[in-house]
Every structure is written in C-alpha cells, then in structure tokens.
Amino acid sequence: MKIIYKITYIFLLISTLLNINISFSQEKDVNILLVEIKQNIDPRMNRYTKLMLEEVEKKDYDMIIIEMDTYGGALNDADDIRTRILDFKKPIYSWINKDAASAGALISIACDSIYMSSGASIGAATVVTADGSAAPDKYQSYMRSIMRSTAEAKNRDPNIAEAMVDQDVKIDSLSQEGKVITFSTSEAIKNGFCEAEINSIDELMKHLKIENYQLNKFELSSSENIISFFLNPAISSILILIILGGIYFELQTPGVGFPIMAAIIASILYLTPYYLNGLAENWEILFFFFGIILIGLEIFVVPGFGVSGVLGIILTISSLILVMINNDLLDFTFVFPSDLFNAAGSVLLATLGFIIILFFGGVKLTESSYFKKISLQTVQDTHEGFTSKTNDNNLIGKEGKSFTVLRPSGKVMIENKLYDASTSGEYIEKNQKIIVSENEGTSLKVKKLS
Image 1 (spheres, rainbow, N blue to C red):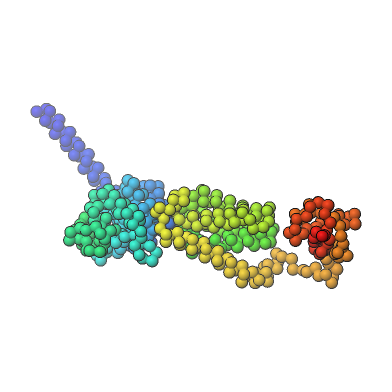
Image 2: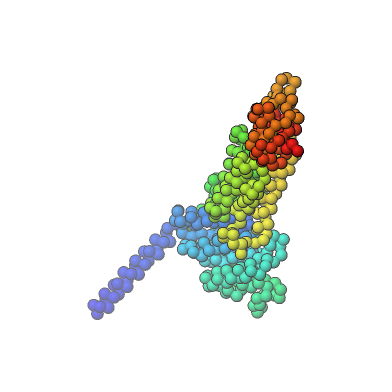
C-alpha cells in the first residue's frame, strides 16, 4: 500500500507541475513577428527574409507569420528562402491572403502550417521565362525536385506538389489534362495543403488558441531600405552609367577629381548591395577592378588600342554583368537565360546611354558653367605671340642623318645639331640619310632620303 501511495503522490506532483507550466505558458504573451511577402521573389526579397530570420533570433520571437500575396519570381531566390525556412527551428506559418503562385507556393509549402483566406489560391508552380513561356526542362526538373522534397519534409503529398509544376503528372480527380494544379482554399484544405480558412490575424490566433499575444510587423531599417533600393536593375543601370562616365571624363581631364570620385561612389553603391546579398563574389569584384587597371595601363603606360585595353573592357563589362546573377564560379546551370539577358541588358543599356551622352552631351558639358570653372578657358593665339613650336620652320627640306634608330621616333642630326624626330611609320636605321618634311612643334617629321 505504501508503494501505491508513493506512486500516486509522484503522479499528482508531476500533474501539478505540468499544470503550473501550462498555466504559465498561457499567461505569458506570445511574441509574434508578422512578415509580408507581397512582391516578386527577387534578390531584394531574398535579403529581406534573411534579415527577418536574424531579427527573430536576436529578439527571441516565439513564432513567425508570413502574410503571402505573390505571383512568384526568381527560382534561385525562392530556393534560398525555402531552405532557410526548412532549417529554422521556430514555427513559421504561411497565411495566404490572396495568391501564392509559383515561388510563393514553394515558400508556403516549406512553412510548418498553411492558412488561406477565402478566395485565395496556391499552386501554378511551372517555371517560366521572362516572356511567360515555359522554361527548359532542366529548370522544370529542378523545380519538381524541390517541390517534392519540400512537401515530404512537411508531410504533404509530394505528388500533388509535383503536379503543381508539371502538367504531365496525372492525379485522379485533381489534375486536368494539360494543366498544372492550382488549389482554391477549400481544395487546398481537402488535399492537405491548407489547415484552415482564415481571414484575419485575430481569427488565426483564435484558431491556434492563443489568447494573449503581441504582434510586431517586420520592417527594414533605413540603411537596409537603401540597399534594397540599389538592388533594383534600373538603378544599377544608372550607377553603371555614372561609373563609365566618371572614369572617361577623369581620363580626359586628369586631376579634376570630381568625375573619378563620382565613379568610385557609384562603384561602391553598385557592388555593396549585391555583395551583401550574396550575389557579388570576391572574384567578380576583383575582375572589375583588374579590368579598370588594364584600361588605365592601356591609356597611360602602353598607348594605343591593344590587348590590355580590349581585355580590360571585357573584364569590366563581364564583371558588372556577373555581379547581378547568381552563378557559381561561372556555372550557369540554374541561371535562367532571362536573368542573364536582363543583367546583360542593364549593363549594355547603361553603356549605350554613356555613348549617347558622350556624343550628344559632351559639347554641352564643355560649355556648362561648372566645366568652365574647372577648365582653362583662355586661348593662347599665334597672333598674340604664342606658339607650340620650338624648332625653326626653315628646317623643312633640310637634309641630315638619323642619329638613332627611328621606329618611328628617335633623334636626327642636322648641321651638327640634334633634334627629336619621328617618321610616318617608316622604320629607319641609324646613320641613314633623312630629309625634314614637317615641323611639328617640339619634334620634326622626317623621311628616308633615297
């Protein structure tokens, strides 16, 4: 009997402790973070969700609710987001307040629970290109794979998830011939892709039996909003235009400082957001600066339009394009042609804009009041006694000898006096007879005397 009493006592004690614990958890406010995914899934949304999960860890939120309304977006960014959600330890609920199509469906399926408002839909996850046509099969195959694995991880039917991508996957009474699956709210509930119809956060809390809660909406800081702003491809094109223009005008007017400073600031604003978002790799940034160095060498060290100049232009333009796309050390397996086209289009559009400004705006720039302040406006005319010629025009027609090899520049001896000289491309050996054909200021133009 004593043993029975002891067992009973222990049982009551454990029950009391459990009741105390349950009562405590009910009295404590549940700290909830509300996150909105109401735009296309792109690098900006990718970074937004990454920062959101870091915020949850930092401030110790109890759960996350994602209010979803998106038609999808970039597959690589959606894959990054769903991977983070799957790996996250705290509960994440998706509340589809209108649409969760394509990448939005993938992210929702990765959440612990899915709730949908009346009139909402989930599915239509076929990968498409920029013009709306179906992407090549390698992309569809990858999307089918991650949709299946994500559904399996959350105990949902992987075949239905795959049928949301592939119109050829047949599921009795669900999929129609030639169409991918898209569920309404009631259909999603019936097939295990939605827990309940929910039309507000309060309604969701009642469904979850959470009486006391504190709801906070996740918002980016001012600095993060600026970074997100500069991830816009249109803004990237403007920054590239400033980079190219700044470098060009600094080379045209060395020492002014303003153009190169504008180029440096534009480079920082262009590269930093992509680097923070994980798109710009170290080697891509090094390619960019190495290309600039090669262009500088071509202009200042080895004048002409040779190998270093061409290679510098190729490296600079290529790096600006590669920074914008999620390639894995030049592995473009899962980079959509449309993404590559958009990145190349942004860079080439900026380059074209630079050329147009150079031809049509160059004259206006030199005539502007600001340019007149930083450039020399006085002219040293010949009639005022100014001249750039240091040699006498009487030397034209004089004969002499090449004092050094002319290839095409060198020195010549005329009437026992040395002069700098050059040919029109002709190669003249040392001690050959020459004749002066022109006087070009500080140098004479000569040719070989037959």
